[in-house]
Picture: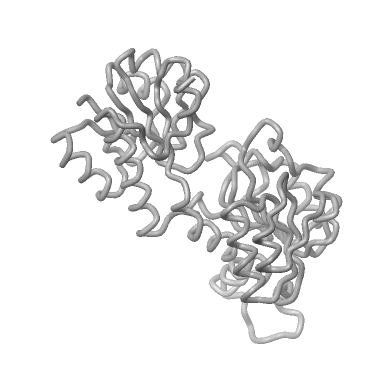
Length: 325
């Protein structure tokens, strides 16, 4: 089989491909391919294992050719792929769901603590030699235990964050979602409210929605103006859910206390002024970056590719119903 992997992934997945197909081609440079490079390198492939950072559209499908059966995305999300166009051409699109839940939830919680207690800011302060001894007003942050946590999107990851913070730190949980999450309510006493109520009442707001046309800029200037000045805002979902320029303005004007972002609106570019703010924590999109999680993702992506090329419907095919029609 003529297979291409758009960037090196953990060896567990690569070993599966070698064992099954003997060889394959891969981008061995530790960087994203340009769109022109992507078009050239997917040409004439039977299958492609791609990343969330690869834009997979009609031009890429044209380059891959009529023999291409699958684009196996090494990610839970697949908004980088034109799924409708893939379905029209009979191409399978797959993802790696479920495996990221714990790691992403844990990072959201880590950001919550880092922002509330000014960990990154305090670390920089100490390293710069500014710490001259304990003081009653030094690096005062926000309390966490017993406070109100607002979860925007109570799916697997949002529910995991809520459960851990309710059980571990006695937080009151509010959530905004299209659907009622009875299990979350049973486990944590969570209350379903509208988004405006959640933003007004929460001490912490954590975003866990999928990126859709409806959720693009779900949180913008109006929403930041509703939040408490003491609110800590966390986004580990998708960058464009948040109007990043509006977030910078809210932080500059102290409309909110702090923000923790693992994703960015125009990634890897950041909104002007974001890196200059002391009250923002900005890791480089590493929510799933644990050894176990990234290896499991690689194995799932490889398994999806193998199944498709051996004539089976992959377990995690996101356009299965469209292909059947």
